[in-house]
Image (tube, rainbow, N blue to C red; front, side):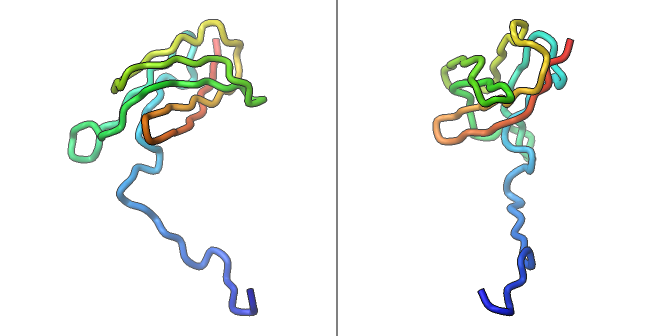
Length: 106
């Protein structure tokens, strides 16, 4: 790369998207259920994303739950049968996937 290579000199920030993604996942920590909702955009309306399925993975990457939905703006998933711990919640839309961490604690 030569002597002029300077890593991290230029950082591009996309201001058109929220740093946290398109979805919200309250409550966190959760006890019995999580509700995934499409985040409102800055103009006050909902963005164009939807929820077609939700996959929940444990810390070893094993899928513990999968729920499929029609194109919805809000979806609830029961987690009452999952043991306490940290999980990755994958929200799937027809053209997009987003992952969020969720803590199950009772």
